[in-house]
Length: 281
Length: 237
Image 1: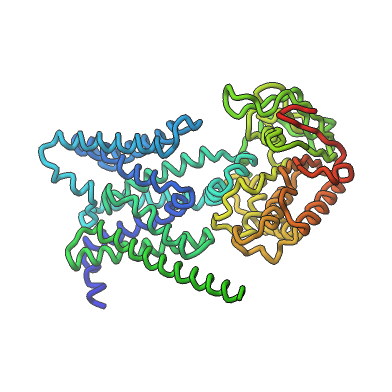
Image 2: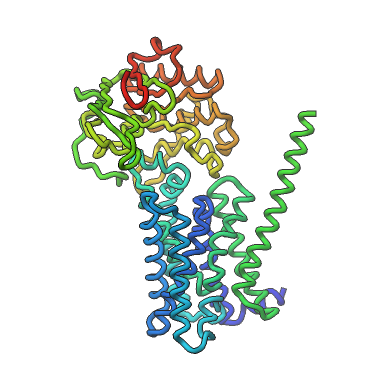
């Protein structure tokens, strides 16, 4: 028990645990819509496109959060704008913007002699989260969770049946923009924890795990939150105990949960099939 | 209540207005700019309380006319109005209910049948308000009317095609609309569904509702409808 709890008595570990929990729970809730609306690729793109924003902010010693928020909101709006009216398929628009922005980030990074300063941006450094950063992360988390709760009915309906939504006067495209901006904000908070490269995992894996276990949206959200909370704390502990990357450990913990859910789901399906066969015979 | 669409003009109360439920004058609709129109100069007048069938083969423009009427497709020429108001600015979506074709929905979405029917209440709730006891009661009543009460807690993909069709009609009932626009309500459904739907349409008619339905069925046309519009290749015939 001590082996489990003792690390969390250290102040920096407490800050890290709080940051990881806030980030992962926020991403897990948002992720349910991301998975149901097949927006996983956008999540990946958004997390990569914050790079130039972070680098520009870093080079000019501006606020890193500010730079990331601007870059990701530009991308979110850009994807919506490029793919409106089906002039360009959405995944193509994402592919163009995502690689373009990431390349811009790499180009900007290469103007600095050493890459070392940027490893924290790319791979996250949750153990180094300051109390100021924690406050920003908490602010973003609260804003996203409150918005999701207030707009739950509308987000659910536009995800399931955008046509009915439009007929009753809702604007599915507007809610899509809201979701994209929320994703952009979540990415900005998550980059701190697991870095640019692994952030989309937090948006996708807990929700995907939940989707294997239940077929009701509220339950799916709860399971997703549970998986995210467990994985962030387990990952943090593993990273502390065996001295490995915290971002990597958190994401792999999510993946382990996913693997278990996949196994359970496969067994359940096989049992159902066998029962169906038995009934026929 | 904060409505989803801001109301600009005053709506005459149901029944008191002399304007027809739907009036189409020389309506032309294209799916994209420059395409051959899917609907070419169609005229239709549907008085309040009547039942009108839209008849014709696939691709004749029946669905297009319904979609234009509920504001899903823009009218490129002519005028189309509901209760005397042009559809583009029709400021009272609560007065109409639209039944889409069953294939247009994602049935694997994690949603129960009861919740699906409840979404018929959202137009009356607007932003921020949650469904109350009255909304759930209306949804349950619509489920009972469609003989789906026992399946209410099932996930929507676990229904048969006919049951899914009834669930969608239950949602349209829950909207408590004055005008129902139904796209192929009887397409490829079982006998049980057929009789439940037909009975429901009779009840709605007795309540004074206006019904416009696209259909393949020619059998019961005279008994189930007051008038029919025959469409071929986007034109009246």
